[in-house]
Length: 106
Image (tube, rainbow, N blue to C red; front, top):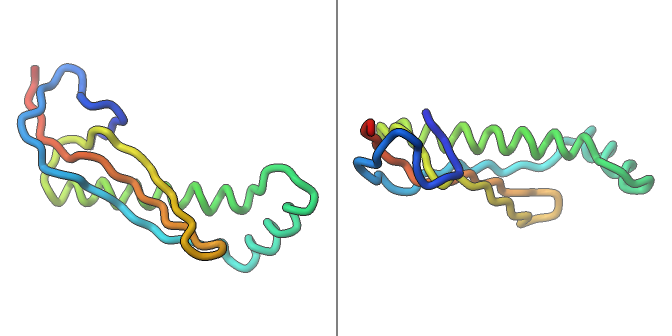
C-alpha cells in the first residue's frame, strides 16, 4: 500500500477516489509508564515512557487506516495526516486519516 502526505503518486494517475479512510486508537499510559513519566515531569526532559506510548498509538492508528484502505481495495492513500486529541486526563485519541484512491500508470 502506497501512503503519502502528498496529493499524488509520481508516475501514476488517480483513476478513482474511494473516500476518506481512517484509523483511530485511544491510549493512556500504563501504571509503570505513568509513574516513570510522573517522576520525570519533576526533573524535566524528554519523558521516554510517554513517547513510547505515543509512537505505538501512531503505529496502530496507521495500521488501522491502511487496513481500512485495503478493505476498499485501494492502491494508495494520499493526503495522509495524523491528529491527536486529549479528551480525558492522560487519555489521548490518535487519528490517522487520508483519501483512498485507485491508481493507473502514467
